[in-house]
Length: 473
Image (cartoon, rainbow, N blue to C red; front, side, top):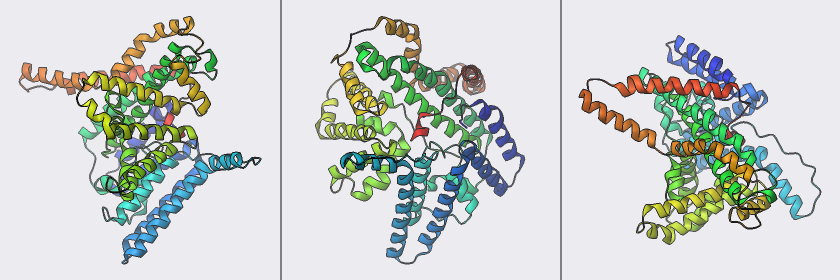
């Protein structure tokens, strides 16, 4: 089940909201939300719900033991053991095939191992569990004594499959509080529709065009086609994942939870460093707080710490060397920027640093898209007219011309123009009405929501099953 599926939109979400708001008792509401979250998770892969239940019970018990321990050495040992077991579970399901393949290749051993199926959302809820254990150990939050609340925190259907990775201290106040309000619900609906439009209208359309530009046979690809193809992929992955995050934040708000932002217009960045402050913020902050700083941060072995973080960032995205290289690719550019490049950017017009970033970003997405490294290198070569069959392709030119308005519109939507327009309308409204009316929030935004919802559903009705890209990670 996906947020952009018609079954979710027309049955699951309405039923969940009706059942949730039909009762007033906080405990019952939490139980209903937990049950609906488990139903959501089990809908596509019912067998893996057992793993989710095991992990939730495991961290529930270990957190209590860590909190009750009066000895620092014992609590630290419990923390290390619990994290090691969680990482072992993640490693077994996600990386066992990758490890076996590499050992077989290294020692020329025949390999008949079959990859394990990756349980949905395992990478995300494993990190959620780890952050919870560490925060309890550091006394940033008390261990949860109510198992239903613990299970709800880990299995919330709006975050369990693809994040954002939520910190327990951030949600602690919402778990038992009277968190719901009409303003939160109204905002949640708006935010969900924005995310749905990103996914249904932009991401899915870009995804349907990519195959024409980024097939498997790059020997027939033109320079023009290579650049258009990777541009389309950059638009698809941004609107797909940021759309999911918007929907998750919107759904959470409908049920009274306040989730932190996961994207902040990353494509307006002027450096790789700035990009990673704006892209997948919850993952970046996780590695910063639970890996980089504990290793020593900027205080000691800074280069080693950065290398480990970016190696793990790449590896987290998938059991393939292309993801590792993608992570280390950004490590190199972050290092160059921190060493001297940022000083140059501070002295030159912003347009030049933005052009530099766009080139770095697009080339980086080539490694992300192609699991075959030889194919990735060949694709980059075509981008720079090395062994390209031609500079342009008449058929691809026609396809591009037919979709140029969509591409321009998608690029514009990746910028904070909507935010700026809203601020402009509000200033204009205040001048005209002197603050007596609220046309933007009472008229313009509701009408926009209705229009976007209608168009999104039209796109979804004729669409095939298109799961979110980050379901794979």
